Amino acid sequence: MYPANFDYQKAASVDDALKAMSENPDLKIIAGGHSLLPAMKLRLAQPPALLDIFNLEELKGISEDGDFYVVGAMTTHADVMRSHLPLFPEVAGWVGDPMVRNRGTIGGSLAHADPSADYPAAALATGAEFVIRGMGGERTVGADEMFLGMFESAVEAGELLTHIRIPKGISSSVYEKYRHPASHYAIVGVAMARHADGQIRAAYTGAAEKAARLPKLEERLNAGQDVGTGLVEGADLLGDRFASADFRAHLVDVLSDRAAKRLG
Ligand SMILES: Cc1cc2nc3c(=O)[nH]c(=O)nc-3n(C[C@H](O)[C@H](O)[C@H](O)COP(=O)(O)OP(=O)(O)OC[C@H]3O[C@@H](n4cnc5c(N)ncnc54)[C@H](O)[C@@H]3O)c2cc1C
Figure 1 (cartoon, protein in one colour):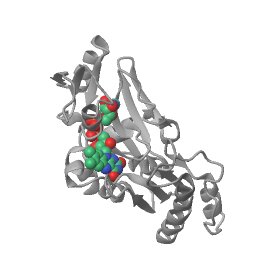
Figure 2 (figure 1 turned 180 degrees about the vertical axis):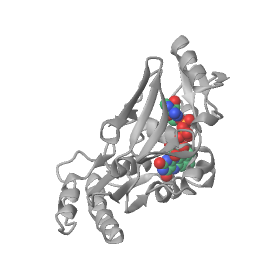
Figure 3 (figure 1 turned 120 degrees about the vertical axis):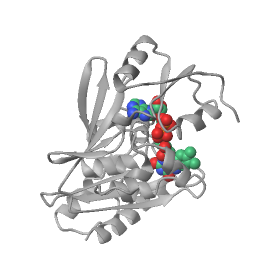
Figure 4 (figure 1 turned 30 degrees about the horizontal axis):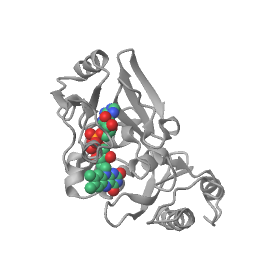
């Protein structure tokens, strides 16, 4: 299948990209293209013009800044997988297949906020922060404020997610996933991280319209109790021909139990 016709241009820098978007609101950023292009081929998205940011070196790689690891938005899943970051390498290893991991980017995935994507659960469990730049300047958004709804993140039109800041001091972390047999996206994924203060944060993805924390689970684990069941009781869960809402709720319980056992 072919997408509808579109114009194409490459950004030379972040500033150049922001200027181009402010001059032409029709411009749509393309990073790794592994969510946008499939959507364009299915005509679910028909942007008239693409702005390619894949080659922006200033947005690639991992560095350190005080108590944080700083990951460039254009760092590929494969590079995340090979890194020393907490939790994210394990999660990246679950994303798609080698072709997707070699081209898709962490920033593209997190800005896109696909309800079945893996990284949002990791971002919530690690308490990551998002550095977002627009023509008006830079702002930082916490993980709890990043995922607003289905395919809706805090990154607004005309803005770029430039970096993801992941706190240091996480002593252990795990990701458990039940994946779709064809696409490999998460039917349910559960991420868990033990932070420097000893507290555990946990989050799930795939089961609802957006990834979210698991407060009941966190409360139980931090009180030294068992994982138990009914972790997402009352939540509005997704159901489709691969997994009903009830099955997804059951998977959240089962995967949380496995994750807690591995976390130790
Ligand atoms: C076969 C297949 C299997 C997959 N399996 C999985 C899976 O198991 N788990 C999973 O999590 N994902 C999966 N994916 C999705 C993959 O991880 C994508 O790479 C990712 O979701 C999007 O990243 P990208 O760099 O490809 O972004 P693109 O597709 O280029 O962009 C996605 C969207 O984000 C916007 N965007 C991109 N970068 C930025 C930025 N820096 N700032 C602001 N907006 C931006 C774009 O405008 C676009 O709207 C799969 C994809 C395919 C094709």
